[in-house]
Image (cartoon, rainbow, N blue to C red; front, side):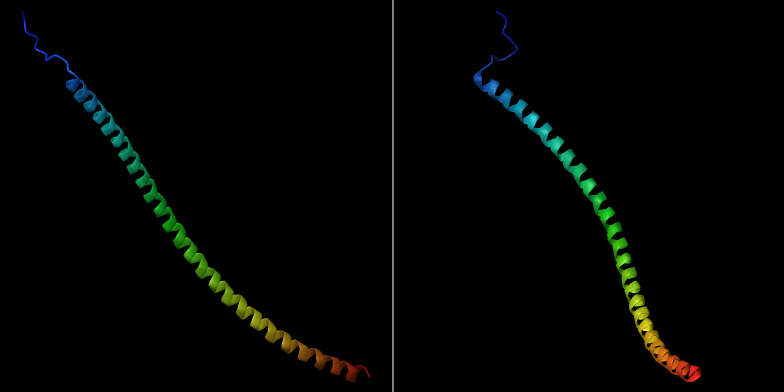
Length: 102
């Protein structure tokens, strides 16, 4: 009788084989999750860069708005001063008209 080169299958060897197959499947799944995680990190980095650019633009806009506010306040003050001067002129012109046309 020839001896078989292979050991007879036992319940122990079957469990070992199943365990190895499961571990290999788990390893592949972990690798897929890790690759997905890497992709997410790259996309988050890209979004961070975009938000930095937007934040700088908003900062510039806020500065521009403050400059415009100051200019409008100055203009309002000048208009009020001119209105006061014109009110006085209107009174003076009315008095002159009375004197000239009477």
